[in-house]
Image (cartoon, rainbow, N blue to C red; front, side):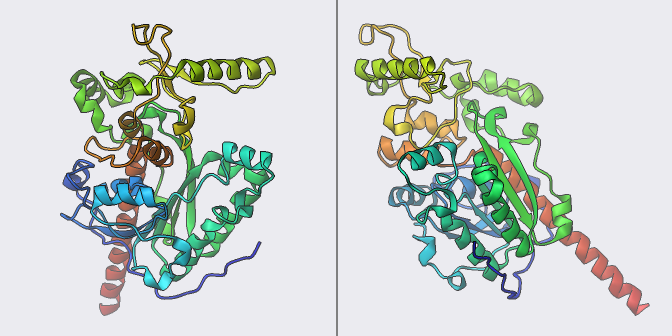
Length: 401
């Protein structure tokens, strides 16, 4: 593996010492167009592999201003532009680091398919390379390194599937950690499951890094009780009151995100439902765990993936028998329900086909989780900056006396 040695250009200024004020953090995640919080811009950030803007929503809510966005998928660009009023730049491999603005934080969920369990299994079955051997997606991490070595942001937050840590016997993750540390970043790493705030089992690995060791020392990943509640709960006043009265007792459930009236097109056909049941029975007899995930309103769903558009098998919603559906075939989630399942705001616009929407939400981040991490990063950087200035001022006063 080729090692990338860091260049040493001047660093951009560290985060403004002003802590993000409480009023900014309490702003809703959404507006008609999801503009950055311009009341108190405490830091600037880069949004790489932006998808439909889940990271941007989170870091904007924490007081940040997005100064650069990159996303190569055209359908995702359409959704991003509809919600943020600007079209992301395209393929990051074709963008020079010197053409990217200076910023305090770089965020990115670089493509997970080369490292995910499902992605690796599929590529193995097709005889294709995975991980860093996947030349299309696997090597994009090195574009992050390329940009970090030139721009030197004060902090980074990277997100990926939890299998990244064990991929290729841990070698892939070792390369990632060693290269980030070689660039001077002090790392904090955690696998966080969104199931404490959203009704799905979604465990993802987060890598937070800081150039300032004092900021790294101050930072810790937030406890689940500090994840902001999704705003779809406000549509259910009783549940909202329960959650806000005793946050530690709140438990998500799928019924919170389900729509009352759903088009019949989301109900599985007899042919597909019979196929999925036969597929499950076949693998169950063989001792495998493959099969669909059938859920009710009180349940927590499986992980929503980008393949959901194919058959919806990982999250199927139980239904009662009816004239139009005498066999009580289950249904898929609607795109709007998928939006809620990922914690996106109620006014987040879905402007693409169902197929594209399923892919986009399945590839996105759990917004409440990233929001809590973003706020903790902002506080840690601001506190470290204040402390350093305090000691510098004290040193000057001592010298003068």
